[in-house]
Image (cartoon, rainbow, N blue to C red):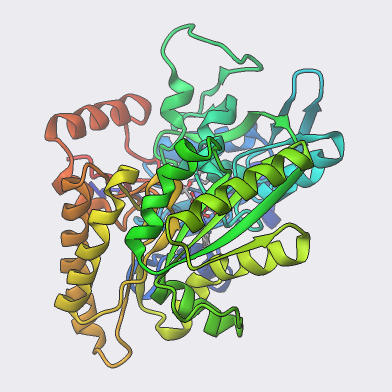
Amino acid sequence: MGNYNPVDDDTVRELVEILGERWVVTDPEKLEPFSHDETPTDQYSHMPEAVVKPKSAEEVSRVLQIANRKLIPVTPRGAGSGLSGGAIPEYGGIVISTERMNRVIEIDEANMMMTLEPGVITNEVNEKISQLGLFFAGYPMSLETCYIGGNVAENAGGGKAVKYGVTGRYVVGLEIVLPTGEIIQLGGKRVKDVTGYDLKGLIIGSEGTLGIITKVIIKLLPLPAGRIDLLVLFSSAQAAIDMVPEIMTGARVIPTSIEFMDKLAFGTSCEFLNEHIPYHDAEAMLLIEIDGNSPANLETEAEHIGDLCEKRGAIEVYVADNYTTQQRVWAIRRGIPEAFLVVSPHQSLEDIVVPTASIPALLPELEKLSKKYGIVIPCYGHAGDGNLHATLVKNPDMPLEEWYEIEKDALKELYSITMKLGGTISGEHGIGTKRKEFFNELCDPALLDLMRRIKKTFDPNNIMNPGKIFDMQ
Ligand SMILES: Cc1cc2nc3c(=O)[nH]c(=O)nc-3n(C[C@H](O)[C@H](O)[C@H](O)COP(=O)(O)OP(=O)(O)OC[C@H]3O[C@@H](n4cnc5c(N)ncnc54)[C@H](O)[C@@H]3O)c2cc1C
């Protein structure tokens, strides 16, 4: 592992021949932004030797053929909004940025599908189709910056997953370039397809370790005409979590989102945003969103859920049924990560996932961890699907060396608690480099071995995003 060759002058010349001088970056100052993603720079960054910006699958293929022949590591990169270090060039080498592959190739209304290049910003997808009454349900919270290719590579989830599922559910076709340079098509404009192995499913969520995604075909849905949000305050986290299945079985509604926030999380966010809703008696909040086509039905469903919450002891139910109030209540949820960055830039934003019924058992364990390690651990996230952002935040007075030690031990304990509850260590952000050590320890060795054999089949020289998810030996 790691016996790679440097990107020498000869290689740079070959890259320039393919892409033109403008799209081959070797100036260290211009390389720096490609040395990190949204994981803490002091812990995970690594400089590439060159960044290339191809415009087509053919150019990607030619770059990969050089890298494979010369044993140079290659790291695919979308917008760099990842939270597991996946786009960081662990072994230097070449970063392939997909920023110029940003065309919407086709909007196919008849089939309700859309064909995209990987560098299209996720938010632009819905901007392009909403006037046609269509909707793409892949919906990470980072949608204003991240790319569709990065979403597929991470199988991104997000706020709407409880009703609509995650990105992979909507991917019907992919074009990928293998590490050896072949361009292959997987799936297509077909809702059903059981012809051979589901290799498309293997690529979705493979974190750029098996090939570079150069085209994505997604399935679209009819755009719901309206939505209502409810911000519900509870006197205990347990009471809030108990409501999650109740909403679906009692009110018989599958909400678009059920977001949970503990007091530490929403209190810090409200303070950061200067938001003054009266929340002081509350220990937890649920942000529940429903969508649909009939305003009357939506109102009835919202009322039903609100009544049910009140019957189960909710302190207050705020209804947000217009754009301004909806923005206001979602700002509290979206503001949490930024609010804690003000408390301390040193933190570990996690995305553990447990069966939803196990969330109440998880929360006291987080409290124990917090006391044991002398750090705060706000907990918030997608309660509707059991995916929670327990975030380990460094105490501002704690020396950095102590934090690094504590973070590792606390993460190990957090992951082991999660697994004991039937959960797993990442529900949406992936393993990357950040969780590799833990994943390798916790994963069944036979499964890990199978993954390594799959990787070897796709990437015999281990040039494609090496050092991510697992090491090859
Ligand atoms: C504020 C914030 C909120 C977030 N909210 C969510 C959320 O709600 N849900 C969620 O799932 N994630 C979330 N994320 C994490 C991140 O935005 C997602 O993982 C996103 O899918 C990454 O997309 P990207 O284009 O930034 O990819 P990058 O970070 O550039 O890359 C991510 C991984 O994908 C690989 N990759 C990128 N493009 C390609 C390609 N074309 N072919 C092959 N591999 C490729 C990279 O090698 C890397 O392993 C959030 C991040 C932030 C900062």
